[in-house]
Image (tube, rainbow, N blue to C red; front, top):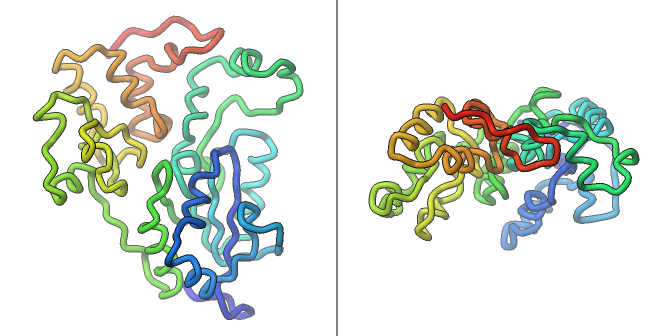
Length: 278
């Protein structure tokens, strides 16, 4: 993608919805590359980094966070209008994040349990990824995102080409690193076979199973893998907890979570009894 005719450098904005700011901080944590990024891009609007604000339009808008309030639903429409390239960053923006677990439970009951005056809190009954509201041009997944993938996307913007981001399961990263499979060798439940790569197989490298923070690989057979885990004799509760993490609301993890009844076990006031297992 080339810069706009009126600017010598691509103009970048970074916006926050319902999130923890961790993915925005990945940009600030680029360390050796940060000065190069600032030299090649005009950081026009980035409240996490500077009080300097500059209006759009922008060449690239990075959006962190899920749409969780009526105000955010309007904000994301405005961001789409101002962006030539809209990129969602992180599990919240691409999959709804942890807050999307409320989508299976009683929203009003949760709000009343958390806030002393819930009537003051305007929130939507469902927390949703940005793509359910507007067209998204690219996604950077993870909790938080991978700095290498972020740099690759920025490089692609400068060169006017498609980002070269691997489309493969975490298991491939394990193989390249020579890691022993924790599922096979230790019997640890792992979402590696159905999770998009990008984390560098961090959890398996430390002897624990992948818990899907980069979201489901499409077309990974999440339902088939959940049934394989059940067939090993694992309790249904263990399996749905595995899928009901940072990216539970992203299909096809969402289908597994719903099938196993995690919504009804989502530990909240007013939540109905847990459903039966698949």
